[in-house]
Length: 345
Image 1 (tube, rainbow, N blue to C red):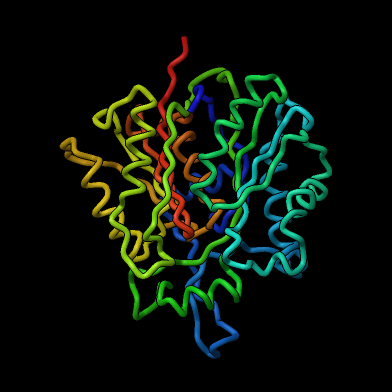
Image 2 (tube, rainbow, N blue to C red; image 1 turned 45 degrees about the horizontal axis):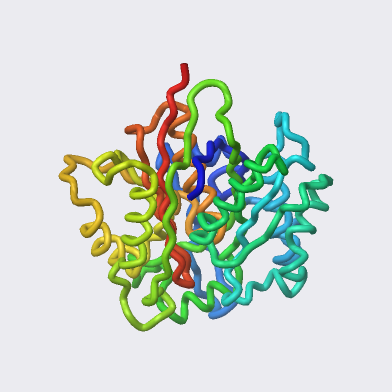
């Protein structure tokens, strides 16, 4: 990472809340938005999911639904902002392409970001981009965001994602692989949905602030889509890179935020990998998993992880001054981000 970036809460819509404040408060309170819903196939089976309450018209098809979630969170991120839309670049993570998300039957993948902008009624900076690679790929855009901010092309960057695993295609795919939470599989994922954005700037605002000071990325060969269990090599490499470049040490880390989704593969990867990186003895190691509240929200989970970490610093409930954020994508991308609080005079 070329330069530090300051990060603050943007906007969100999740099963736990229709805005960022409701969402982060629900996660802090350890609430659960899980519910059991009937499946059309195989009927009359049911599945535990985390679903956003919404009018039927917004769910006419998956394309409209993704655009609606993205637009709602993006508009919230712009509320009360001094930067105008043309001074704002949007970097949006989309559902990973291998999933053949049903939204693209209604809206072309290349058009989804423009459709979200149209629903917002705002014209954003031409440097805005949508990208593939899932949640972990978000970290790879931080240098691009920093370059735009450094050049003065934009005043702020909104980094986010939008996704929904609460659809027939993804549920069927995960069910075939026995990856869903059920009566017979306690260590399974809960499909969720949502959109989230965080705000990136070159300088902090007034009051407490949070800063991204290191990033690491790697590719896990033994992804959840393979036939082998990950040994956590890529995540360890990401963590080593993030903290070696940040000027911080592993022993400085005081809490962790992860987009782990609760399935067996994820749990075993963390069990093996973390023992290799977190070597300092800690009596307790506070760890937050937003998926315990909102389910697995796919490409949107990176922004939510960063939002929770940043909000904990800014709002004063963080259990320390240095946080590690761990991000994993189904396709094998892994990334780690080092965050620290900034005390201003």
